Amino acid sequence: MTDLLNNATKVQNECLKKIDSSLIEKSKRPHFHLASPCGWINDPNGLSFYKGQLHLFFQYHPYSNKWGPMHWGHAVTKDFLSWNFLPVALAPDTNADIDGCFSGTAMEDGDFHLIVYTGVVSDNAVQNQCIAIGDGVEYKKLENNPVITASNIPFEYDVAHFRDPKVWKENGTYYVAAVIKTQDKSGALVIFKSENLKEWKFVSVADRSECKLGMMWECPDFFSLDENDVIVISPQEMKEDLEAGWHDGNNSVFMIGKMNRNEWKFNRKSVCQIDYGIDFYAPETTLLPDGRRIMMGWMHRWEGVSTPDDYLWTGMMTLPRELKINNGIVYQNPVRELESKRINPVSGKINLFVGKTTKADGVRGRHFDLLISFEGISSDSGSLEIQIASDEKYSTKINLDFEKYEMSFDRSRSGTRTDCETFRKFKFEIPSDGKFDVRLVCDTCSAELFACGGRYAFTNVFYSPLEAEEIKFTSSKALSFDYNFYTLV
Ligand code: FRU
Image (tube, rainbow, N blue to C red; front, side, top):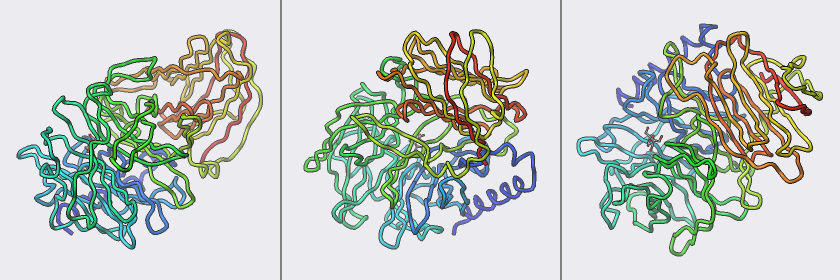
């Protein structure tokens, strides 16, 4: 192990000890989400099942709460909800990645755990693809890194933007899909293949933005699900378009279609937002041995990170979510294992009267799973406001406006001290049978909302003081709904 790697692990372990010995530090952390052990994390990397456990790596700068030279942190879980941190897996310590080990993916390959990641060398601002092979704890970089470089690409592109390889194996051949910035300054997905991991051949440009779907693309994924092929891309510099579901800046999208496996060209049939919230980016997926396709995203954002300055860490990941496709629509829901964390069930019906804020017995806290279902909803049903993490001073609001077909999240009274975006809204459809359901999973400082069976996901974080834990409902017209509430431990 190199000094850089050792040192990063040492700093991480000291931080974990500090957290473990302080009730205050512990109380700030989520209970069943992965949060940074120390310092900064961004993208999930290398989400993969290897030797009976789910592994997650992440973009990591353990030395401060700000992005810096990127390492790969590493954690494992057996139940998808409680994570053990392992030694830092990669540090920027070779000529091929001296300025950063950027995002990538991993897969089980026989006995080995194979990582493909981006090595950054800033002297001439170049990004190339590198490989490391490990046993689930220690990873050894190939001596002939970088293995995929500009020399593999038969046309001109911006060599400072070639990153985030997704690796998979098909009929005994390794494939990598990565993103590049083409001459029109927007993103494209390029595919390579190899028989031996060392020599790689360019295969195709599978899809590209042509400045229509954001500018540079980041963090691709590619998989088949329920008879569709799906590409995941996180495009930068998108323009807000409420009807299409985009917000300004970084978005993450599902592109659904068919990959022509002779030419490796993607026939894109539809594109949709993955998660409408403020805090969701760069998701990765993997296939579990039981056949489930799960996805995790970075539960934060690049612009205006809202973690309070006195935290020892910044950055969390979403819950692993199970994906399904039905009639061309992707549905996402928290892994079913979350149900094992439920205690103290409370259920009933709430009848709301105009202008009267209502609470329900036993419905409070900062760790909960709340399921609401409405019948007979139409554009005449008015709106419902749900306040969470609330007390006299603080309140975090979710508004379901059936008249405008809009859902919104407002953290302007959540106690945020940083100048960050506090409001986000998106458009939804009301199902034709008038049934509308919402599931809200809250864990200390995050709210992941799933509506209409998981058709819409809406993820936002808030760092209100922990004593703010009331949950209240208000409507603009008389409105009734059934609810099931569980505290999560
Ligand atoms: C996405 C991203 C990736 C890059 C990494 C650097 O959030 O910009 O494209 O590899 O973060 O940390």
